[in-house]
Every structure is written in C-alpha cells, then in structure tokens.
Image (tube, rainbow, N blue to C red; front, side):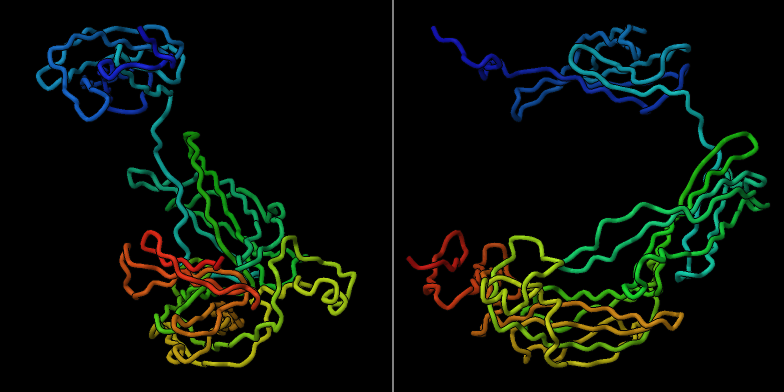
Amino acid sequence: MSFPIHPNYRNDDERNYTRTYFFTDRGIYRPGQTVYFKGIKYQSDGKKKHRILNGANSTVTFYDTQNQVISTLNVTTNEFGTFSGSFTIPQGKLNGTMRIRDINGQKMIRVEEYKRPKFEVVFPKLETSYKLGEKVMVKGTAKAFSGASIDGAEVNYRVIRRPRWQIWRHFFRPAIPEETEITSGTLTTGNQGDFIVEFMALPDFNEDSASNPMYEFVVSADVTDMNGETHSASKSLTIGYTALIIQADIPEILENTSQNKFTLNTLNTEGNFEPVKGKITVYDLKEPEKVFRKRLWEAPDVFMYTKDEFYKLLPFDQYNHENDFTTWEKSRAVAEMSFNTGESKEIYLKEISKWPTGKYAVEIRSSDRFGKAVNQTTFFSLYSANGKKLLTRSLTFLLCPLKKQSLVKQSIILRQQLLMKCLPFLNLNRIWNFMILRKST
C-alpha cells in the first residue's frame, strides 16, 4: 500500500468538482433595497469537460457584514442549470460588504447609504495656450444631470504649481521639489452655473529661465449647491516660457535605405494642433577619436585632475561625458529645409542614403504665437546594412532584419560592433532562425 507524500495530492478520479456562479442585478445597494440574483451550477473534471447540473437542489444564504445569517432560500436548478431568487436588505444593519452563497460558490455585494448625485462639475478644454507671467482664466461649469444650471452655488477653489520636467534621452532632471500654492478663494456660480478662476502663471524664480522649464498648474474646485451637495473637479494646465511643443517621430536608430519620410507635429501646451513655420537643420556629429569604456559610476561634478592627467592614468575611462553623443561637437550640416505644418506635417530627408554611418542631430527651430523662439533637438544613429563602417566603437548589438517587411520566422542578423581591434575574428552560428555573431574560440 502506498500513500501520497504531498497533503494536497489527489488522484485524477478525484478531480471532479461542482461550482456555482452568482450574478446580481447591481453591484452596490442601499439598505431596504431588494437584491435580485441568479446562479448557474455546473460540474467540471478540472480539465476541459464541463456539464450543467439540472434538477440540483441547493440552499442559498444571505449574510450581513458580520457574517450573520439574514435569510435563506431553497432553490432547484432548471433544465439549463440555473436558478434565481431575491433577498431584501434589512434596515439598521452595519453597511459594508454582504454576501450571497451556497456550498459551491458565493457573490459579494456592497451596501452603502449613498445618494445619487444631482449635478457635476466640469472644466471645458481650453482652446488657447498661455505662457509664464500671463494672467490665466479657467472657466468651470456646475450642471445638473437633468440639464438645469446650478446657480448660486458656492465654489471653493485652489491653484497649485508643480514643476514638469521635460525628459531628454540619456539623462534626467533633478528631484522634483514640492508643489506650491499660487492662490485660493471662494466664488459663486452665475445664472448658467458657470464660474471663472483667475490667477497669475508665476514661475519658480529660483529656476533658470534659460533651461525653458515647464510647470503644471492644477486648478481644483469644490462646488456646494443650496442643498449642501458637494462635487469636485480639477483641471491641469501645462505652462512654460514658450507656448509651443515640437514632436518629431524620428527613431533613435535608422538604416540609411529604410525610410526618409517622417512626421513633424506642433502642439500648444494644451495638446491642440497649432500650425507653425520653421527650419530644420541636420548635423553630422564629430565622434571622439578615442574609445572609452562604459561608465560604471556616476559622472563627477568636481574634477581633481585635468583631462590630460586623467587620460594618462586611465586612458580608456571617460573623464566627463565622452560616450554621450548628445554632447558631441557638430561636424557639418548635411541637410537644411523649411517646413510649414499648416500645409504638411511630413518632412523628407532626401539624401539620407548618401550620409555616412554615425550619429546625427536634428535641430528644429520655430516660434510660438507670442513670437518666442522655440528650438527642439533630437538625435539619431544612422547605419548601413551593407557598409563596412561600424556604428559605434563600443560592444553593442543591432537587430537588422534581412528584409524590410520581415516575417516572424525570417532570419535576423545580430551585428556585433567591435570594442577594440585586438578582438578575434567573428564567425556565424545558426540557432533558432537567428544568425548569431559570436567570438571565435
């Protein structure tokens, strides 16, 4: 005779089980309301076979939040394996989570002394944008669900400012300081249920304006009508020294024959399209002559050695940000063009197939509706699938599809970029539809 070692072990013959699924007409109720429920009972072998149980008897019990029995009901499933019934929630019980269950399943419901809201507070989307130092006017409306206006209601409002750092590739801004209250006060809704919150879009004067910081101003309002019912809403506005956001969909890595058409989108700080004119210049970046190892620690902010002294001690380590190509010097302009997003959002890099492998910077220059200059720089890496020049002189891998429209099972070449000339030759190994470049032994 043998015994199972695991206490939860059971044979395949014992895997059959019965389940009851409950459904209710609502998920939340008030005391005194009736809960209408329906259940379906079935049997399963624990794998793929399921069958409904008709003619099965069961006792359904209704429990309160303290697990005390409120009521019971005997039911029998019909030919479809279902049954139905109802319970009335008693008054005076503790509100919270109650449950309906039988021996094979249960259903939780919420019981609360809630009131249906009679009105809502909304902030319509702004069609215009603002800049720092301007007076901002934000309109809100309190409107009943019946369509009537909520006039004469009290509005308690508050405006706070939070810094909103722009994220650049390869580095981040410092820790975000605490929010700052700009203004607060009390208003009264007009005949149409509307109200206007006014405030000055003040910047943080400790922040350097040359870095073009952006701030998020949050307007919150609590509206209380004559019956004492209160509802709240908030509106966020992004405001900076400029009122234009430029977005270019240029990928970080490009193959010089893959594509030359990209989309340029210009938006105001509210996210609405704003047509502008401007110029685009593409620069070839000058790569450092030396090869540096990847930094294993943070870049210093205080230097004890000069650059030459440091290189004598550690010739392959970065002194500052030598591997960060966003800091590289511009070599030459390889393309210049004008754009007008009001006419077309597409930009073409027509000569990209003739450009050498390397790193590039795309400078986009325009101005917002206030005449303030807006400059946006994005970077990308360009390589040639058939070229001999390495994209970078660091140990990196590029996934290069053999065809432009490659399928899942088509081979992919992993191109290994050499770190130093002393590395041995590479050979090819085919594993799982992949061509893997690896070091020779």
